Length: 269
Image (cartoon, rainbow, N blue to C red; front, side, top):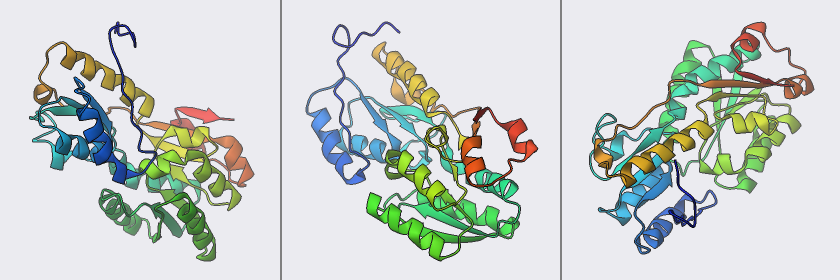
């Protein structure tokens, strides 16, 4: 789009390293620099940015519902707009794919971070889908890397047959760890983003984070050229990618159903 860092755009980056508690502090730090726009990740980032400023335009890339933070998806109002990959709304579809992959499946572990308020809604959607498939869900909490390890020990002790990690900044920060633990403990898993399958996770289904962040740049460009953020609709994905890691499937002793292979956007061999 013609922007060259250090020439006609300056980027001040701050990273919370998966710790949501740091977001308000970082948002205030950036507003004190008098930036022209705030680009934030997640509804937590948007909330922190909106609390830090009422005047600086905000662009958000989120994967959970933004309804409580904007007037409407079509016309957000205020100073914020952006994109959502609606990852949490695909929870039931992911569970269905896991059941297709493991036909004898009856007991599923759900790994989530209780400090992310969005996960309660996502878990409810999983429960509704599980009832229709006669699946028992068992909830395991993790607020830190150590608790992720402990959760997998608990899953094995609880005789879980598979695991569904609910994506949030903590889980996304530990992509390789989650993929490795699934394989080590012989637990088939389905994830929200292809980065997990790339790292050795079994299967992923969701919108492309790469696409979401590239599209976000067009919102930044429009606002720099004078557009009012509140008039720019929040964009939602129209395509979801299914990525299958066949190498991991073979290591787990799973035969990948032809129906899933036919639907796959990419198969990692």
